[in-house]
Image (cartoon, rainbow, N blue to C red):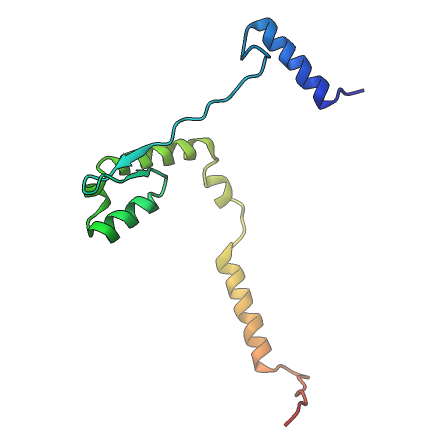
Length: 132
């Protein structure tokens, strides 16, 4: 009979305590990396650096009328590193591309054909009667 999650966690904590891993109760606490922050050269506002840098771009263009490179030097390089780190963990598009299906293009053509057939009123199409 499989053990419950409570028993499994208790066993894992006991092993951690015996191995000297984690805190005093045997829990392993995962510490997240600190968010990367950049300071605007013009107004000294601190904003988070993300993969897309949307906030930084909006700030630099709308508030100062400048590019992100001028207001936040080095932010683009840091966001590129973040993108590469995320892309390294995912599968490439090669597996997706080799599925053998036509994809959106083929389905769009089929939908166009269906739409045109419906609009043409094909054989046996009846006119609906309604209020005049």
